[in-house]
Image (tube, rainbow, N blue to C red; front, side, top):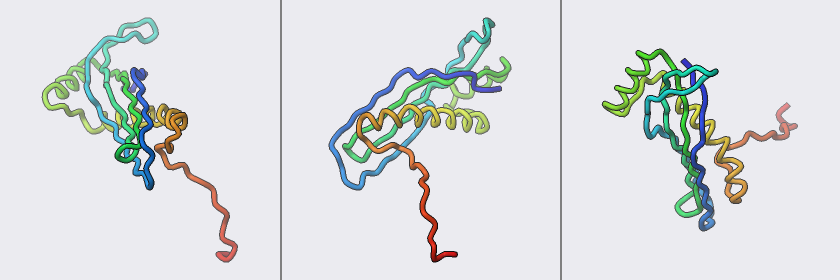
Length: 139
């Protein structure tokens, strides 16, 4: 079953001391998984709330961005119970599901962090493809 929604709960951005040859590192991780009920089209349904954190670190002291949020995931009641028990036992989720959760959390993290990084005058945390002129000698 799908991820049916998300909510960003906290955004933190900080500009620190400028550095040369800055190394930008990003990370996303699931912090907690909680079974809850949500409303979908005026119908109560069980879901798992995947609480995540997306972190961008700019070198040692140049700054950082943290995006904290929740992804809402629905499935059959039996599957949700199984996943919740698995998380509670060993803090792991089936690979097929966690990959889609982490990918969506990362997408949301980049979407939120790019404008914030620009406002803080930090480099954006994603390498944007650029056009280049074709080499005429190559023909």
